[in-house]
Length: 362
Ligand code: GDP
Image (tube, rainbow, N blue to C red):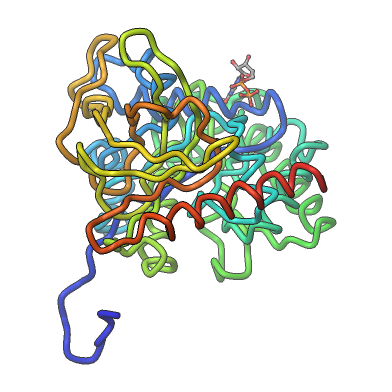
């Protein structure tokens, strides 16, 4: 409603893109997540934050620090507030989201083990991403396992490739070629990201190591760059509330809580909410909104902190009575003074119906 593009030179406000990581078992999904989080925490104490909430927010300052050299060389300017990484690819909600064909993720990172190439679940993941029309990049992980590889901690991958022996470089080239050929069989054009002629036609490959940190700056910069350049519209901040429930948990001392991803809009303490519930829609009031403290300040296993309000995008734990029967994968709605509660309940009910319908037909 606000796009009067001709006159306005002001850049639109962007929200953090939502990233998810998927791929075959043992390719290094968890390790990559850990690496991204821990290299982003001074002192390296990342453990304990994330299982609390289902999504980790990586502020842009951290990405900037981590990818300083690479960003300088590319003259790359960060405009996004950060990246929001969904922690557990196995979330229940992903099944619901999958079957309902709606995508929570703005961009996916598909992890392939460079020593193994495409595996059964890699192909499943590709088909899933296609079905959801989710754009993705490939982390070609475990480069450090290439014979004679000389590890260069946390540097960008092209710097690392410069110091490799001829042998290691040749093996690297041939494994990249193999993966590109295997992706072609899946009817995907792929290219090392710095050689990619067209990001809309070719999938970018980012060689990484979750052990040495090589290629992690590249992964962060490329994800940011793609979202800023090609998908800016998708991550333009909107006031209209969009919030998806990932998980429902009852916690001692708090009662029923849901872990949710706030994709757009603002949630505030005291908001009247409508949620899809097994049985019937649930109407409740937000008692408290909890988020992990900013990564930068997290040195020890910390507690979640309460917020008066939370702005997208962010992972948030919502405390409200009666949420025990909330359905993961469905939307959380806010009933403002202008809304008709019965309309919202009907909307929540129709989401439940479509989820149950999908469960029956799948
Ligand atoms: P997931 O099942 O995809 O989450 O894979 P994990 O992160 O659990 O990793 C599986 C195994 O591979 C673990 O033993 C990791 O330590 C190891 N691993 C993961 N990434 C790398 C990597 O980049 N290099 C090496 N050498 N090992 C890795």
